[in-house]
Image 1 (cartoon, rainbow, N blue to C red):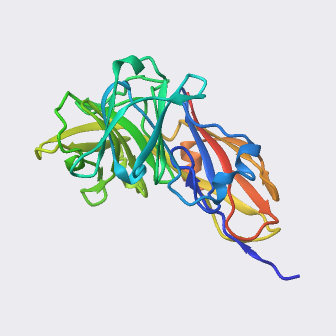
Image 2 (cartoon, helix red, strand yellow):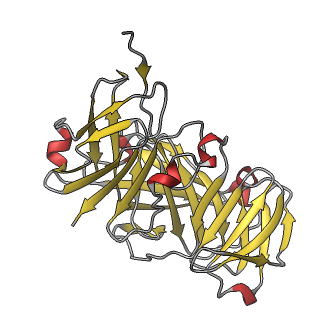
Length: 318
């Protein structure tokens, strides 16, 4: 009987939902607020066949005043709706929206909406969901660029919001964000998705593990429109899951790498077998040292050829 190759792929599903058949990882550090879809949410979802970008989620500590939106994430803005704490869409809200000379969108959110939990900005090219943070724990580290919550890198993706001293924003497109790659001492640029006078919601993709140094720290830097920089050294950690190409019906080992944590810390993995898949065992807890020595976490056997999603929850145990 002829075997058919399958390729197991992994993409983050935390901020950007989309892709032909994206693998979905649900990353949860203790105390963090993340998306947690069920098996039924993943299988047969209309998002699975949509082309990105589709939905982007960011947090801001305040939803009133001026909010600057990167046009790459929405395009022309059509509607803005309020969002309650149950994540239910409310009615359309009247918000003054302007397109600046650099193409960025400027929203003037009235103080009457300051009690709103979130805003859903729908545009021609994408939907932007802006909410208040559920976890505002302060991060350790030095510098004036401070993250809301912890910093977590999964499959090379980092999405976070950073606060900084008040600035007067006139040209948002001239602001830049970067992370130092300790391997070659150069900065890797990310995207600023949303900007306010004292905070920026940003996204990075394809980050190597070398952005986290041996002490578990990253150097992140914000370049302002006047050419000056705000930089901070902050704790961060992350992981990658590794599955080789295999044949249908043949178990493939699942391993991982974890960076930014000490060898004695424990990480738990919880897999959900989707249609046609058998992932065994479905749960496993290992130390970082064991993981980075290549200890097998699980195996996956699938009847489906070609790229397919894998659902996994990864937690740092404390």
